[in-house]
Image (cartoon, rainbow, N blue to C red; front, side):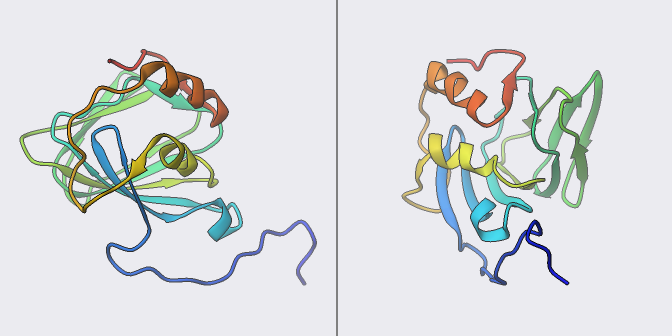
Length: 164
């Protein structure tokens, strides 16, 4: 029996390369699922991340963030611990735990990122720009005041300020 407070969503499928594609900082993100498409259950982002990219130390107040490395090598730093993961590697980043990562080497990494519950994927959509192709965005300086201002709306807290 379905109750009124159970979430509902329609089944759907996306092929490789399908989804809303945005350039966000040094990444090409394909949004595979959102709050709207899953009834708030899960946000899924397939991200191609530039070599050397490292977001500032931050934490999420609303969602857990599991990540699966599909290509490349990524070093994660979480609460004083460090792991370097390659293809097939998985990490679970719980909400309220400060973390960052860095793409190692001279090749991009491809990371499948989940947001549980959904919602944080909207941060990338709001701050990103529609991707003009399947590659990485051209280098650009981030709008740090805007990144910080919009972060609070999505329950994101930067422990270290983004670098301009």
